[in-house]
Length: 158
Image 1 (spheres, rainbow, N blue to C red):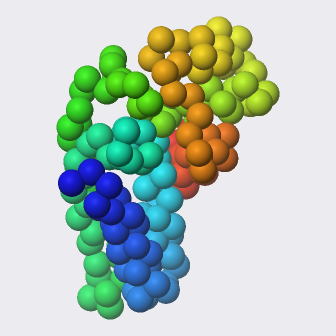
Image 2: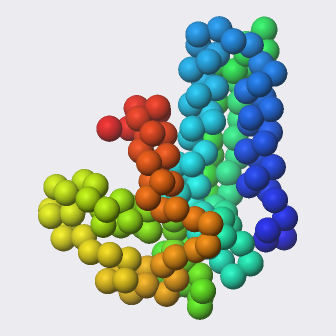
């Protein structure tokens, strides 16, 4: 059921695992990677639908690996796209994947000027795929993009 809380429940579970597991150096780094990778996955895989502002448009299977002291030492995330049509079509009051709005909002506020020039990026209003529903109450695309950049840095994506 859309809006049932699956995405939020998964976030709470990851925070719980992070708070009750060990605290060695490797464990702390793994916890940070696990927690910070979620905004990145959501950005590229979630979208606003009529029923849910942060609806997962992909399936995610997360397998965490623990050492004998109960500390997270690694993990694997497997993704599968549930809704390929989201890339080319959105219904009224729906948005494409979050990353498009986040990147464009960041660039419109002066971020990444070389990318703006190289790709001739405009605003969300300039593109057919993003103009149906640009703003969402309670969503700050610029701030969310900062979380994406932080997550990319944490997991070593240049």
